[in-house]
Length: 637
Image 1 (cartoon, one colour):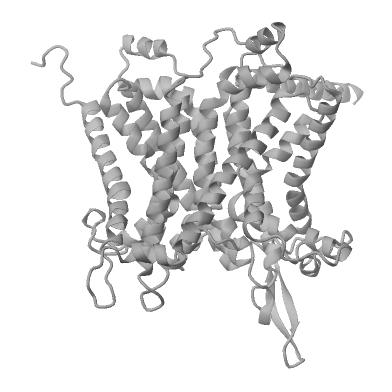
Image 2 (cartoon, rainbow, N blue to C red):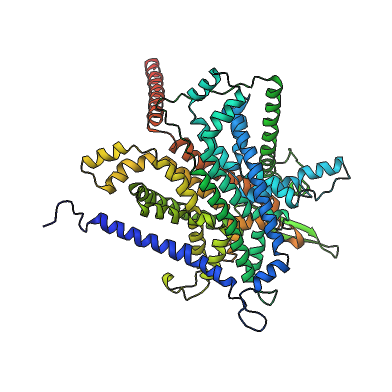
């Protein structure tokens, strides 16, 4: 007879044991061991005599130019934290806190980075500012003394990434500001505080937790930048690691160990930053506990000069954000000749960049013309591009779903054991990939699983042939775990414990309580994280380049290849047109997903019922009008 209070060996116990086993398998097998293998490879390097020399790579680091890559990446990361936070905070304040004319239009412009990012965004800026870009060509024609290669190197990378990395500010900082209790703002103003004093002493302190997360993400993004430095010609760590990963001992001295060392250096910088910020974050807790919050009302800028300057600044940022989008969309419907010459021809519109093919005629070095049948191909008519789209879509969806599923189950366990060490251990283990740069995880996967001796994956070489796709999915999933848990965990705080207690008192099991009570509450946040993860992975370039393989050529790698010289000897024709069409396609896909999540899935129950009632009234009105017309017609007959 089972004793009272004994849980027994029921389904919940089995589920818990399976969860622990899977979690241990995930952490040790795909987070810890591959990275430890990378660390040990640094000290097992062999010299020219074939002897192990533990300090060979260290000596090479100080004697060679490896330190230059470290300094360049660190400089970019530090400056990005400053520029991205300045621009990100300012655009949110301009649209959500201050009373700026046209704020809704400005917000749409600032949110364009949500629907295209990564290599697609960088190629968009290149379309405008590279030596043959639209704006650069116009500037050179107006001012012949301008260097046509001005948009390259560090300044170009910093400029591009500053505006590319404000997506998280637009999402999460905007929500934080909208959640501010207006009663506190009004109280401060009634006590005589000036508007900017209220902003600094009342508003900003409530934003500090969000700013911590955004700062960490921005620093890691700058430190691990890949697509922008690669395309804009800046010597940073990640492109060098990828180059070394594909090199051999015959080409240069111990390239794999040098790549491992650079990866570990990136990890050290990231760990130090997280440790400092986490220690500072624990010193204060900035949460509003008001039960009767008043909706924030926009503040007017009392100074006429300050108001004018704020409007000018807001619309200058709007132009910077919108110009690449508008130009790319317009040129996506232009002919091959117009795109190549960067001249807009409003009299000739075409869909060739999306569908269909055309013949390409070119002049050879011998002065004769040749024709390549169907060489000018559209986005969905080009076999390589279409294959990259399909592969990236499937892998990104699977990885985003896996990351959300793992984190939701983990957060449920963490909150059930919030005052116990095991809950803290689970959370820190899932945050472990955040301590490591993306390039370190991917490089570790490439070297560790490029072997048939790893027993816990069935002694299969995961880097071989089609198996590399599974390896990419695993890397995608692991890299997105920290971001997912940081955001989904915040949603669990919205769950009222009384609801859970009521479900338990009614006899519901833990699993049923989770499915019927907790999951519906956190589902909008989970869907939002899924959408953000999918959008980021769909055009992800950094990890794809590390796993460079003909069987794992993702959409981002296809887009990057379009930046190469086109039309040479009749090959890679219309690459610029497919680039523009690809960016438009990415914006449509990302925009649709974000709308479904934030526009539909983000509505609470009251809003959904209200919309349902409006649709019902509209339908009844149409039906009554139809029946009235039918009755009149019948009477006339």
